[in-house]
Image (cartoon, rainbow, N blue to C red; front, side, top):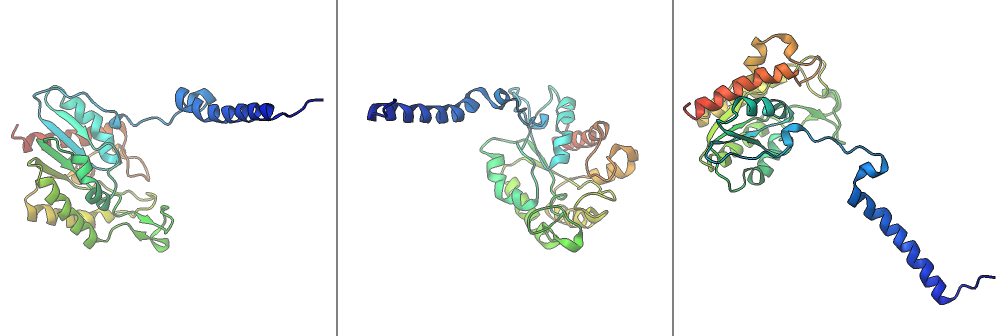
Length: 245
């Protein structure tokens, strides 16, 4: 009969602890793929880029719409400018106020193209889920949106960069958590702020309104690949104008 001596107990406990440790260590060393899991893909716009010395440095700030036109903007400004962006979805103006110092860093920027709006006007319930207006409230009131925009411009101005504001693109019928044409009210506020503070406006809303309807996805605030290229052309033009080129 097996006798559980103190030494045997110690060995058994050590083996058990080692197995627990390996279950924790292996995923860190070999990654989730070791267990047949596919890591979440990284959006191409959030992949770090290598800068070319001597070229102007451009920063794009904005939500998923700006993420969508980041790559075509880079392609259009290849060998003309270093196009970088905040390494996340910029979200609502309150997030911008909170994170601008981190996003800007201590680097020198020649031009900053920025936008907030689609996340400010969305309706959420107390749990943070998209809902209809009768079941929640908008992330930012018009007054809060204006106050945050003024704080954002003041902080961006401290960089010495040329600033360009992009108007918020249209909200189609059926968009989850958002109401058609709400962006018009928010754009009116933003336009007043930018004109008051002397910031040029890249009117992406007008670009979409005058472009083929199929550039935007149905019941969705996002765009087709060609739609993002159409937006990118306007972004590039506004940046080049700001830089005097």
